[in-house]
Length: 142
Ligand SMILES: [Cu+2]
Image (tube, rainbow, N blue to C red):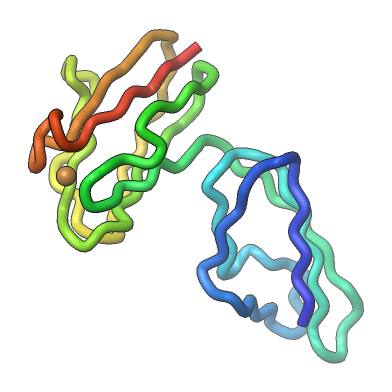
């Protein structure tokens, strides 16, 4: 099994160190997740099959929620970009706009919340459970 990932300088994260591609299927989305928008080309070889290739385009960006911070705390995106927060921590958190633009409510570990930023501006947010002094971030939309 060989999996090669190339992209336009975007990072990728893998759910598992070994990605299994079912025999006869020439795609490799399963088990691969992307935390940065971009166009990715995936090639893989499964026993008994020739190299398979697929490309996938992801839009938007994932902000990782940890205990207790956002990573990255400040991001800059073009207008129209969807942002997804995913809770990678062990306890619940929220992503809540300081100005009432969005409010995820409590996100249990593993949960996600998405919001699409259509208008330019600076959007500060925080976690209502742990407070702005502990957990805050900013989305800058250009
Ligand atoms: Cu929190």
